[in-house]
Image (cartoon, rainbow, N blue to C red; front, side, top):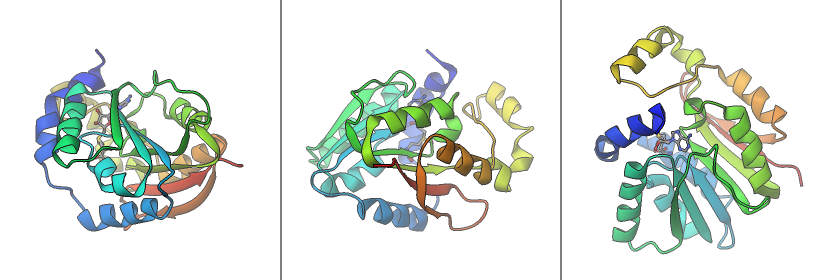
Length: 207
Ligand SMILES: C[S@@+](CC[C@H](N)C(=O)[O-])C[C@H]1O[C@@H](n2cnc3c(N)ncnc32)[C@H](O)[C@@H]1O
């Protein structure tokens, strides 16, 4: 079991009950994602957490595979999906580093609030490109700590030892955008409500 896995399992219940910090921004991002979904869309979400995003997208997509490293997070996602009577989301526990599916299996690969948590986000972006069909969309929202929360960087290792934070990587939005392009995507849309907020990006795998 990895440190990240343990951390997210431990806070799953609390995470599921915490209110969303910025509902207006979340709604806006969901609306932009929905513009790109059709009843035929096969969507993969990695790091789905307790499944709120997948549930909000389910009626606009054909099928959603929601994955997460944490069994506790995923358990809550499954229960809530079932209680909501949603039939087109399936769930799979997986570290995204180990997730495997045939190339080109998905029209959209989605990772919300996750890239900054990964040991190797470059490998994750490579995998997203490989999993997408040509012309598919990679959509992310990512905390770019160096853009507004650089003062947190020295605190992160201490917070991690004390169990207050999960493992987090610090970088800025310019670097993230460069990395997305280096992974072979064309950025079509980017948005954030203010310069210190998470960067929302929609990037296309060339057709
Ligand atoms: C900040 S939460 C975001 C959850 C959800 N996407 C959202 O926006 O509410 C990060 C999630 O990523 C998951 N996670 C962390 N590392 C992961 C990995 N290597 N592979 C898959 N999921 C991971 C955690 O278990 C957690 O559920």
